[in-house]
Length: 258
Image (cartoon, rainbow, N blue to C red; front, side, top):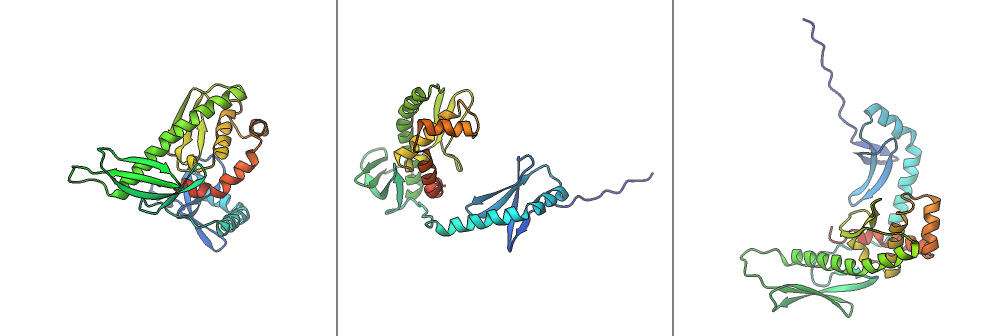
């Protein structure tokens, strides 16, 4: 019996050279396009997962000039940015809350539960003593406490704003959920569910309000068409200014506690 020889398929492409740089290739659910994305460890190329190596190389080569130009733009913006300061959860660390910078101050609490207090440009974290032999490091406890604090503050601030702007725009939302997104500020579903990133609370209130209006307007236009942006600007004239502010500061905010 004649056996058909088995041919090994080529390993998937892992990197592609753009100019003098070799960028990692990450396969995603994209349809027929490619994109560059800035990650903490560098820029990567997002490509369709269902493309063969040959088809993918044709696509990358045909868009090489665009990739090179876009990568250059990333590098220029990176040079103009203030270096990111990582929040480690230790004394003196700083983060923003409603657009103001607060310094972390750790205290030992005599109470049975730990707590967080924002006052006089300081974030006081009172750590309760635990009777357990093994307990998380103080820095880990601090991060958990601050995230819980920010989520509750976000819930308290965002719900009245959603109600206010929903009435103004003439829409109804179903529910509010505060989550810890790593790359977006909010999302809106057709059934009226709206979700926000608690890290958004680092922004000034007028910037947060823009994101609220943005998500509510998606209940009318589930896209980013001209009609959508016209509606957002109609109900929030400071939209261009808010978008520019997020573009300038968003990378710092999004990395908090990641």
